[in-house]
Length: 121
Image (cartoon, rainbow, N blue to C red; front, side, top):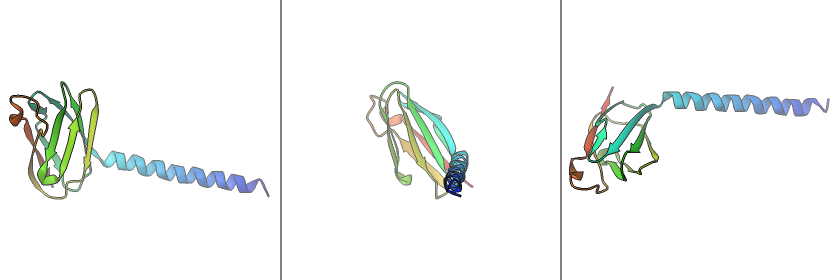
């Protein structure tokens, strides 16, 4: 009888861990991951289309130096360092086209470094 106590505990822990792992896997699968590169005066892609109320992860890499990323209308902001991956997670809550730009001065031509996030149904 004493041995059944630890067995029950182990079984409960395994069931709990399995439920947690399944929940994490379904959450990650539901996210739309978009890879974006930043380099001298441009983002690629410069137009990003996402779905309303669907979790999004923007994965940025800089190919040359530190850049910024700002979408004032969606209250998103990030610093993109060369050699690192910067992730921005958000859930678009409104339809529309939202301008983004580099908000860290990166040289002559910096003001042209921009793009759009398009949120659709």
